[in-house]
Length: 339
Image 1 (tube, rainbow, N blue to C red):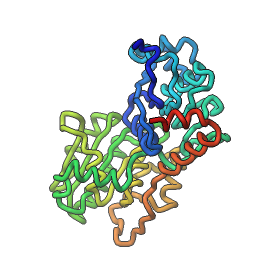
Image 2: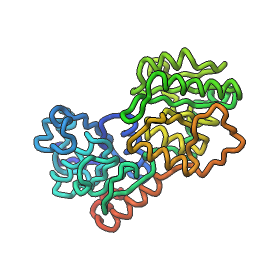
Image 3: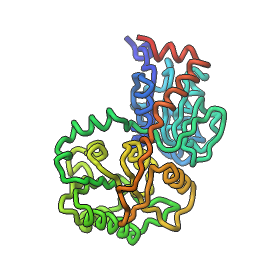
Image 4: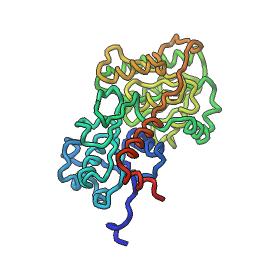
């Protein structure tokens, strides 16, 4: 059967391939209980420079394997995450004459009217009739996800308690995260371990500078340190680290890591530079005000901490997307629910 008449998947997930963006989009599709194909939209220049404003000639701005799929029949729904993806989701809405319903996760940096729905954190200050606001980033972390993490990495539960998971990102504009600041971050973690004992489960990310990777290995002084610094260290135990943790320390730069840590229901700590500025400080302020996030303090009294319920927004967002679809697009609903 020619490819042009094959029945397309009802839903596409489109991202730039970054792990945090893939997780958000896939988490929404799973929460909506729909099957989806994941596609990578790493744009070429000049489309990347102008993403998502430039859509003209986009077929030449994507990889050949994706270009071959950019034709009718179109997917009923596309869930995009990130600016590269926003270019493609916008293009699909145009090319399909509105038949493809587009859900864009994160602020696309253009008017949300170019998409059917936009899901964006409140600190992005994006407003509109078709905007669904969240506190943090969408993520798959719930009770079942944590149980699965424990089952996949059972050896972590054998490490001495209390177990502190340490999630390390990288410098970000608006945050004065120098090597001196990072040294203070590590020193406060060391002080807690010296006082309370236990283990450290340390994970870096693709944005972590080499100097921070080296400092982490050299200066964290717990008796037991389980360190993951990339594929050379084996399978990424991130899910296991969050599952096994009794408490979590996170660098303040990553909305994804902060949101996922707060979704575990465990105490989460960070060290926000005093000179921090910009919209990310609003997220920190709200997380602290609601009790999900605490200052990384060597003298913290864990016995006095009162944890709110875990920060889990995914189910509510999925419900809102379904409500809009059922209210306005019976054709899309039919395609998504067909056997």
